[in-house]
Amino acid sequence: MARRVLYNNTQQLVKILMKRSIICLLFVSLILVACGGDDEADHTTRDFTIDSNAVLTLNFDDPAEFETGIFDGDSSLAIEDGQYVIRTNNPDGASYLWGKNDTTPLKNVVIEVQATSNGGEKDNWFGVMCRVDDSDSGYAFLISADGFWAIAKADSRRGLDFLETWKESKAIETGNKSNTIQVYCVEDYLALYVNGEFVADRTDKSFDRVGGVGLLAGGAEDQQVEVRFDTLTVKSASFENKPNTATPSPEPSNTPTATSTTTATPEASPTEGLVPVTVQPIGN
View 1 (cartoon, rainbow, N blue to C red):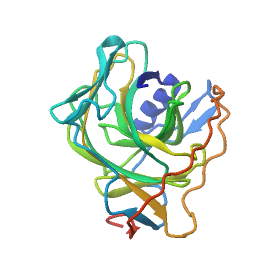
View 2: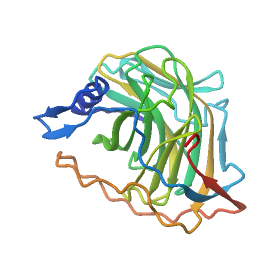
View 3: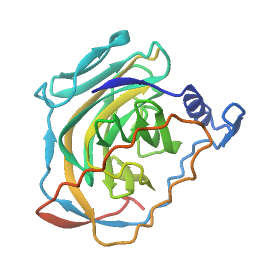
View 4: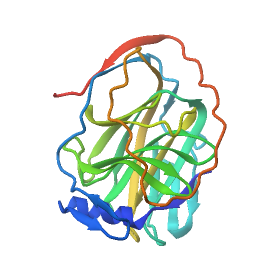
C-alpha cells in the first residue's frame, strides 16, 4: 500500500547544513557530517548483461499502472496527462509519499524514468525505489531540485536510512528542469546515474530479494512539493562474472532504529534474451 512516511527531522537538518557547506557536530545523534561538495564517489567500471527488451514500460496513461490516492494534508498520488504526479505539503513534519508497481517483481534490474520538480520548494527530494515488497521497504535513489543526491534504505517505520548521505552533483539539472534518473540494482550492487552521468555506487545486502518499482517525493514540514514522472522503463540485468569492487557498505549506525520484520526471500525471476553491455561513467 502506498503511504506517507514521516522523515527523520535530524536527517533533514543534516541535509540543510550540508548544503550550506558547514562541518557540524550534531550532539543529539552524536555523528559528524562533512558538507556536500562536487566530489563524486569512486567508481570502477562494471560489466552487466542487460535484457535488450524492457520487461516493463509505463507511459502513465492507465490509472491501474501505478498506485493512486489522496492522503492527509491534500497530498496525493495521481496519473495526469501521461505522467505520474506526487503532491505533498507535509503538515506533520518532514515526510515523503510514494507509490509502487509490483506487477513484474524482479531482483536485478535497471530502472529509468524522467522526473521534473514542478514548482514548490527546491529543497525537496524525489526519485526511484527498487525491490519494493509487501513490507513497504526497498532501496531509494534520491535527487533534489537544488542539485543534491542520496542513496538510502526506505522503510515505512524508519523513514530513510542512508547508505550515501546528501552530496552535490553537477550532473543534476536544478530548478524545474527535467532529469533522467537511471538506477542499477544488481545483486548487492547499487548505482545511480543522472542524465547519463555516473553519480555514485554502493554495495548493500539488506534487500536481497525480488520486488517492484516505486516512485517517491517529499520535503520538509509544510513544504509544497510537486514532482512529475514520465516514461518509466524496467529491464532485467545481471553481472558478467566480474568482481564486486564498488564502495563497501558502511558500518551500522549507532542511531537507534525500529526492528524490521524479517520476510522470506523469494526466488529471482528468470531472464531471457540477454545481451552484454559495459556500463561506465560518461565524461570521465
